[in-house]
Image (cartoon, rainbow over all chains, first blue to last red; front, side, top):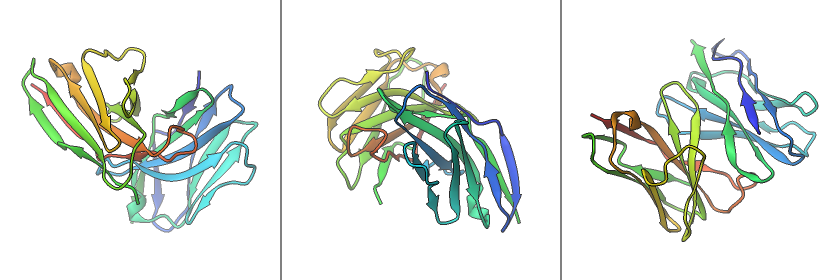
Length: 114
Length: 118
């Protein structure tokens, strides 16, 4: 079965600093996708970044980038130049193969200190 | 960007009554819609997947007769919680995507509905 693990329930970062959120996953699929979603206090889920497992190049979206280590089954999210609006719950998720559904991790609550 | 709405945003009902939650894709046609349940400070748990015009596929442990899902059109899916009880109180989130592949088609999420059963 596919599993996604986020070992950091809470993280804190100073405004303008960089923070990395950890995520590990387990899958037997050879073709899968990994995602980071943001859930701010409004509860609206927003896609932050997506990585195809077959791509070696790490995905980047403006201040957000990932460190995808396929052999280690690790998929961390780096947020650079943190802003107050980045404060939210961040969920790592994966999908792939016959399981046409997203499997979410337990989330990391990120606080941004001014 | 693609927008998904949910109605109502909050609902309070008495135990034993039924509640319907609507999920609409406002500017795109959604081949597939998903319903999730989220308990406080917890992750999203997939309840069911629905494709337009066909029966929903429920996850293990989700009661089909209690959580009725209808995906009548490419822009509307409804979740009806029948004979609601206090343990059904939760935050319900829907999502929609244009195609049938979770991997390649982006899921757009609704803002959620908070259900409180007294």
